[in-house]
Image 1 (cartoon, rainbow, N blue to C red):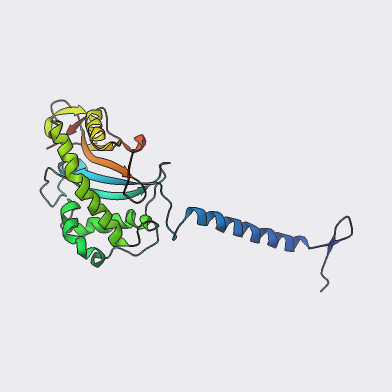
Image 2 (image 1 turned 120 degrees about the vertical axis):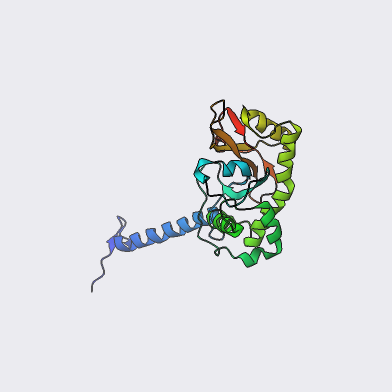
Length: 251
């Protein structure tokens, strides 16, 4: 077989177009892999910050979507919904494929605290909630946390630092639960902001019963935002809040 050569204008031997195409492809792959490694560590999705999300138990149970589903009587407490890797752009960081499925044995040393901080209001087993949150959010944090224990232990640490404190902040400001009157969502957010020094975000859901003032939105979640390690408080992006101007803080 005779190999075709391409001569340059100066008469020098050049590689055939087929060889040049292969060389260009190899250079592109090296460039792509280099860029990818800059934005992905240990195969995990990149993220910018953590949302620590606590939910008001009465609001979970009075949401029409959960009517008849709750398996525990709600207490007037904020408990964990989740610890969520997040991006400032709003792009979802969920259902990452690295790491193993949830293993209850890995969180055994903190299981008692998890039951207290992170109950599942819709299932008899709290582990159902933990498993779902690990699958959706926790596995995306494995570029920061080495394993499941570190992730859940960070959530428990934040629970001990902030869950009761958020409730105390509201109580001291005379913000008490009521199914009959509503208040400004900005008033609630500002009281938390003034106490912790960083802007929280509030999320609301529908209220099962129509109160006398006709409002149907109630405070369900308070979100505190942290750096990627879940350690340093930062301001929450305004876009993650969804409460209207006036809301209920339900019993």
